[in-house]
Length: 180
Length: 118
Image (cartoon, rainbow over all chains, first blue to last red; front, side):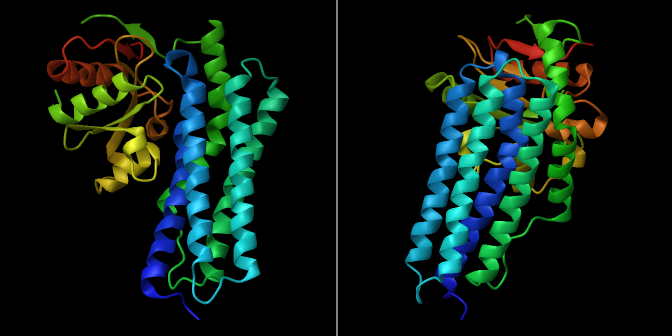
């Protein structure tokens, strides 16, 4: 049975929003970690975004539980796993933002974990859409796929570059422009 | 020079003045010579530069991005976005960024900036 149209629409929008929000983490939270010296309160920023993501997933689980007929155990299990992935994402960003000195090996491991989280999120969102089931499960466009993959492919070098800039042994990525 | 919506600019400034942990997302559409700005937290799904670009029906290929932040008393712009890497690094060419800064300054008196070196 396919969920009724209003319920389906709400769930589809929530799932699309969640994947976009995870994409925002890949795209923008990483920039916040890279440029954290220049920002007002990057720790609070990551904290707020992470809480927002958790709330979105809580809303998804609440909406799922309101479905008629009741959602299957498999659906609720995938939603619970999505919540766990969100917590893992938070751990990775806590690591990026709190550790100013990271070995290349640890940095590489953290970037790889982020890439795994991204794959996991895409798979779970797609699976949820199929299990609910939604008539059109949310999916990224090829352009979005390429965009986020390109970011992940370059992230290790970006962190290394930002560290070189911070230690003064590389180019100054953001020289101050003090004129008015 | 580029066109800027004065109200958008002020809205981002006010959002950052209210809470310095907030950030603004800035995009230049090179083909339209237009700058758009939003507080990150007000993007419907907090999807960053790509969400802003797609919400306007634009593509990453025609756009460049930057961040607005408020580390102290004044807002600054940071030449940094993942959409810029199609041209190589995370930052856009310095001359282009300077023109963005100048365009925004015309609408936003007293703004301090952070720009990529030439």
